[in-house]
Length: 66
Image (cartoon, rainbow, N blue to C red; front, side, top):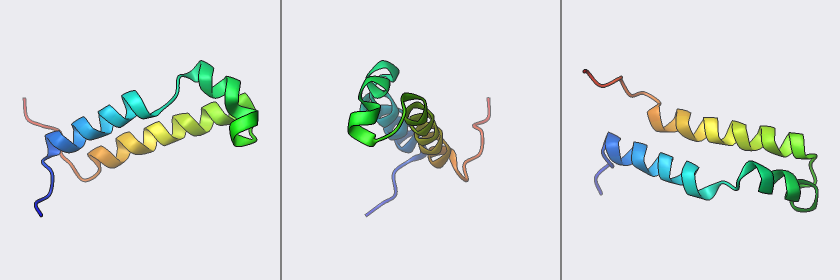
């Protein structure tokens, strides 16, 4: 099986970030019930997850030439 192109990896990461994560308001509202965290802790963790997802998509890739 071939590896996905850089463009496909970027698209997949952006698609997950755009659709897989709840809105900040929803995360805060459900934080204690769903995760056992304060709203601030849940938002911080979601932010860290989004950063990690983006970082993984560009890891080892060079910036395209203009």
